[in-house]
Image (cartoon, rainbow, N blue to C red):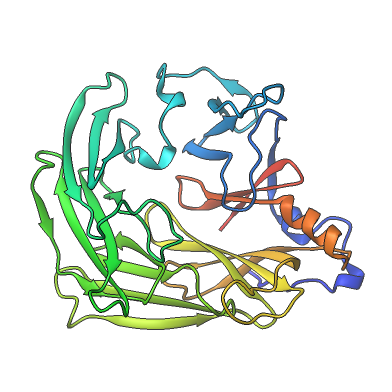
Length: 343
């Protein structure tokens, strides 16, 4: 396939190139909850089913509920009564038969796995926070403990990160737990990783880490190690954005084989934390393998105006990039229309 360059702003086509290459799935109903970029208002329940997060526009407070749609934008009956109202799609096992929820009690964090159809508990386990307080947000420089389903849905990876004792970096650790007995876990060696904001994922017996709040939007630091032998097989590398662009977001595929990137053409100076060139003159989608190799552009949307207010409006109208479970397509919303494109 060809690599598509961003069109010159003064000669931008009537229809952005990304939209010409993508296929429209549906107009976004007004009842879908609003979202920007990664703040989701929909997700993929199956290869041909979309789950949308809804709100009541007449209510003063947002009312969260969910609705299934097919690829024609038609509402689909809820096959499992009740599941739509309390769980995020990411909490479900790959076959959607199990789900997991978490609860905090002071210093204790408990995860419970249960069957979706019957709500029968499969098992649970509890950990104690390393930091002396619940790790509930990203403002402290590290993510809260999380779990990731294995590709076969037979085990769970418990992923934690916390500040080193000397305060000079983060320590990350992965513990694998089998569904047969979730109270027992195999803890892999803890590893010193990035200084802050390290997001750890697991694939093929390895931990892959990205620094999601880098101080240079032109660069994207990554790290990888073998779970059982981190000292002998540690890799560090930094990806560099294509000329004239900055990194905005990184989304690995469900099978952790590939990735899609959101990039922008900066309109302001790019320097230091939080100075990523926002708002942007253009946005584009790129695909690569999960480590960022073999990167190619899928298409771009160039904004015609250079006025700050117009750029803000355009930026707000694009986002919600999500992988389809087939691992071959990604979807996105632009101007309240849902599209997808082969990645």
